[in-house]
Image (cartoon, rainbow, N blue to C red; front, side, top):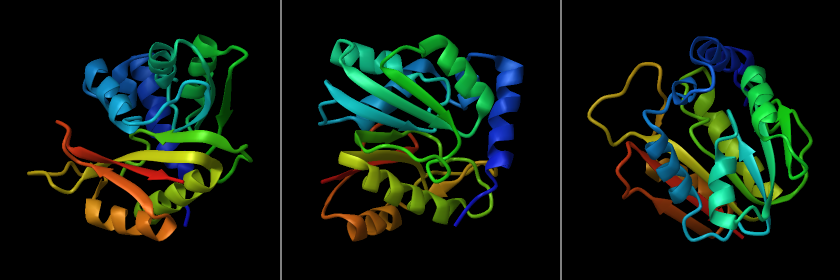
Length: 200
């Protein structure tokens, strides 16, 4: 089931050493594209007053987005396997309503939350990542009182970089339907990816 989390963590820690607190550390093209991902992940949901779990939280960039869309009315739990990113996120965003953990969703005992979110954390092509991604979806759904939201790089592209893991939306959707009845697949925004929401 597992992946070599140390291998993946080292990728992001090395990027942080090179770029620091920068969008390049996360592998994104721009801040605007990252914000669009957040908008799509939470499309149709109401995060105000809710507890949000950010799986693969990186530098905690979801927090300013939540500040904007909730007026600051939310609680936040961030978890990431890259300790340097978590340290920086805690430094920038550490306050009473935020908590950060180093590890993955299977190694840390986490409380139930209202909404769980994962953005881009399943895109590194490492051994076992496809099965790990589906198990991560299972775990996020079990921790979420309302909705679990994840995005994936899509197989519907002209080419794939060797370092990136792409997924068939149909396969991810089919697995999600085994978990719950209320599944939404979003694949109509201008990114080479798709988003899936599993709601209770």
